[in-house]
Image 1 (cartoon, rainbow, N blue to C red):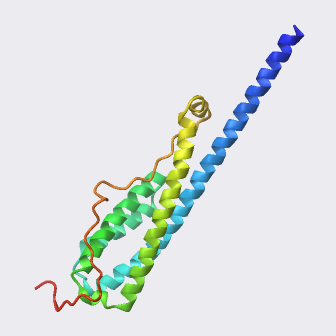
Image 2: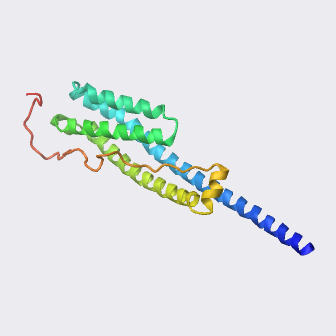
Image 3: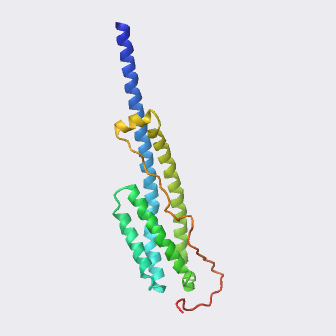
Length: 197
């Protein structure tokens, strides 16, 4: 009888320790994902801080392109009001689409490409886009590790019971593999004085 009691106590202690360890590992992984998402958002904030200056610079030359400016403002507002990572991803994708259209518009205004402030903003934006790409990749790696843990047995049973849910990957929008054609060749001679003619 004592042996059976000891075996039951040992099994119970092992189960409790296993569950506690599993729970703690999920919390750690979830925090890694959240921390990495914060890094993505830091780079988004840097981008969003640059975009108003870029828009104002372009507006000075291409003021009639109001739809694109409105789309950019709407995407920034949507991002600010997002309640979760998926809503922020959607808003960021909307902003990237509008920003791509803005860059295509720039091609029609060669005088912008000779502006030092515009070129400085574009260089900063390019650096920010590279940082965003790196941080998104790291975020997806953390999400993958976390999602695998909660989707494989016995983790899927335990995670469901403990309330851990799958985290979303950062995915590009449909058609993102075809970027707008933009040429910032400053050596290109363009004698076009009025792109609307």
